Length: 120
Length: 216
Image (cartoon, rainbow over all chains, first blue to last red; front, side):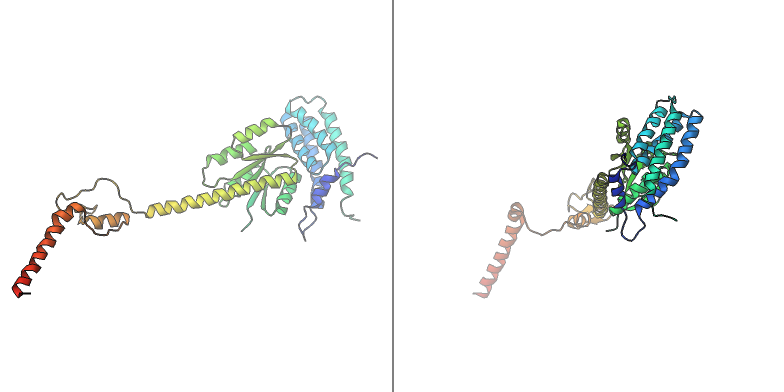
């Protein structure tokens, strides 16, 4: 069994942020993560497709921020690699980098689902 | 005391919500902005936040641009700005601090560290406000103090002083009106010899003469 995609210590910190009597902050943040990240991965793919190095830099940077905040270490690292490609304006291998980001997001998303209330 | 207002500006919604939740839990009133323009709208509004936690990279206006604008508008209680930057960009940190940031935190923010740094900002803001209040009350006091300066026209003989409305006043009256000083009257040794002693002696002679006439 590999280590979980989302760092348990980060999840524990987020869980404790809920003020008494208010909606669960952890659920709110993970729900947002699941909704928000796919559209931003799509934007990153577009930037890679059109050879927009600045766009790649910005999109990967902001994704890295999201990943870090939920403790998705693998996704964070995958974003850092692509962000660096954008920053140095060398997009060779950026498509592979984005594919890696997609795989890491799927792993993180599967782990995030386990913290959300079952909707069935 | 009402909680301090903190602006959290980040285009990454997950980061924004996490930082906002951390600061809310620490007792701050949080307003959020999802890009640089929204952040600037809050900061340049009528009731700007006391502290701003600004992401370095934002669409619209980025952190340094906002800082430059903020520092151009002088105020006695400037916003305390904490920049949020990536762990791997020490160049950003130097540039940000030079542009006028008060502090920085690296992303993703460690909650304890973030709160500790915002608390430092709150202390600075409190001090600045207290100082600004003090300066204001001193300025008020100063404008109420009557001034005494410049060239005073004085009569060479009776020592009366001509005031700015062209009236001649006794020196005591003039000084009292312009400085609040009060006088107690007495005499110096020279004037005692010149005026007081002769008067006393004259009075004694009068008394002596009266005694002789009445034969007592």
